[in-house]
Image (cartoon, rainbow, N blue to C red):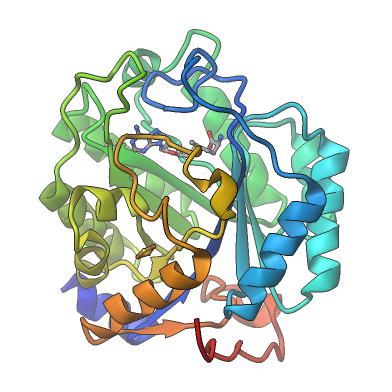
Amino acid sequence: MASEARDRVFGKGVFIRGLIEFSNHCRNDCLYCGIRRSNRQAERYRMTPDEILATCSAGHELGFRTFVLQSGEDPFYGPGIVAEIVSGIKASFPDSAVTLSLGEHPPESYALWRAAGADRYLLRHETRNPGHYATLHPRNMNIDSRVRCLRTLKELGYQVGCGFMVGSPGQTPELLAEDLLFIRDLKPHMVGIGPFIPHKDTPLASAPPGDVDETLFLLGILRLMDPTLLIPATTALGTLDGTGREKGVMAGANVIMPILTPMGVRDKYLLYDNKICTGDASSVCRMCVQRRMESIGHEIDTARGDHPDLAFRASPGTPPAPAPSAV
Ligand code: SAM
Ligand code: FES
């Protein structure tokens, strides 16, 4: 039913987003995350604005028309630097959308980046329940502040994505119901969910991973709750199950986010153990996801892929990108 609901709004097209993980430095210490501040084993890196732009350029050649800039909360990239990176990308690739996924920041920074041209923002709420949130995060973080950020981002006109990990330690069906009710209330444009996967150098190293079938079930619920949502089949789902991303699309997802992070550093952005695609060049990933989607009767859609409510306003007259001719 979820797959049919998705087809009625989006057809068989699956949007692609090029994910650029430009820094794995983080001031936060989320208990589940492999790049948390306290993980002394993580080999840290930062990409320069020029390297980020060059990565977008390579991605544009491959047909990407959305670039997702993701990092830990890294104070090195102050609000002005991020704004320059965003406006640089928008000036070079006016036909492309920029999505930011940089964590919690003051409203002024979000406003500055929006004015610089950022189109979308991903900020998973992780869990709506304050008690559960407190078991997964250090004391200085709280769900109220995360929700405030999401509401501010919406007010600023971003296409906003929230979401959570499936099977995070302590999660119960009741807590998942709270997450779904929160999503119904927030009305985001995107929802990212993927299974929790333990990382060996975190306090949650010995916790069991989330369940693939439960993740697929929840993807279906989300699609039926709001058929217009942009929902990725995540890398984490593909990590736990060799055909997890295909199953995610068959369960109702309509977005896939191949990694564009350059080879020299992509194996250092390790949020969880055994992450897939860390040894593959971007061009290989691009064609790999295309083959995978075609194997289940879907096709890659190289348009910007805005939310249906905004698609016309956000990209009037923008032609879809051509498919890459070769790898
Ligand atoms: N710093 C930004 C933020 O906090 O939103 C973006 C980067 S953060 C690493 C991106 C997402 O990775 C988090 O929202 C979390 O849901 C997910 N993540 C982190 N550790 C994970 C794990 N062990 N298993 C699965 N997903 C994880
Ligand atoms: Fe990266 Fe398949 S998506 S190798």
